[in-house]
Image (cartoon, rainbow, N blue to C red; front, side, top):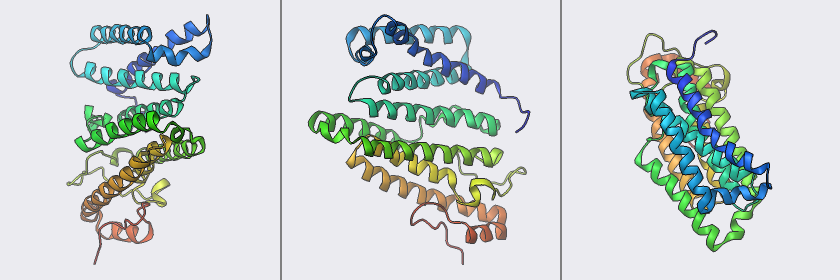
Length: 291
């Protein structure tokens, strides 16, 4: 990857994400004339909501002028994630009981944006709007909404449950480690990585067994599993902690079995030997059985 120029879509996404982060400028300017604890009110009270809506509308207008067609679709998604990341930072740095939800917004938006950016770096030929993973599946969307609903309901009914700071810190560590492992896996695999399970072997496909792949056969799935579960630990969502763990475990078990069928077909004995040496990395998942 040394010396490779980032494709146009990747460069556009970076500019748009930073433009979305400009939502931080207004509270930073306002703070110079006031105090920090007003920032959360900026997000939740009517004047703040109006200012944010106007700010986002202006940004969208700039994107419409600067880009057309597919590039605009990339830019508006990256900008949206930048706005969410900026709002998450504002909440995280405010004197409010919603701090952990700010952490969550930052981790969620960064995960989806970095999926696109890293794909643009390592495998631009497979880069599409789907690389943001914003439309991953109906189940994924329902799971996200469920976590927001649970957090809000429990915060209103059992506010002390959301103040287990030590548990939220544990969740944050799971999120950071999971995110780092997944991105390390993507960068190590390079052009061999794809968000879609491949059923046909390309000439460039090689069996990657170095780096994090020397410790886990499926490090990107391991990272995503712990990132996903960690977001709910961070939010102190007991129902979703259980639900996310079970749902993610079942999804990755099926995904790994499907993927390993293709890998055995692609690399035959080389993959079988690798499979014997290295575990999947996920608890109680051994992958496809080989007789």
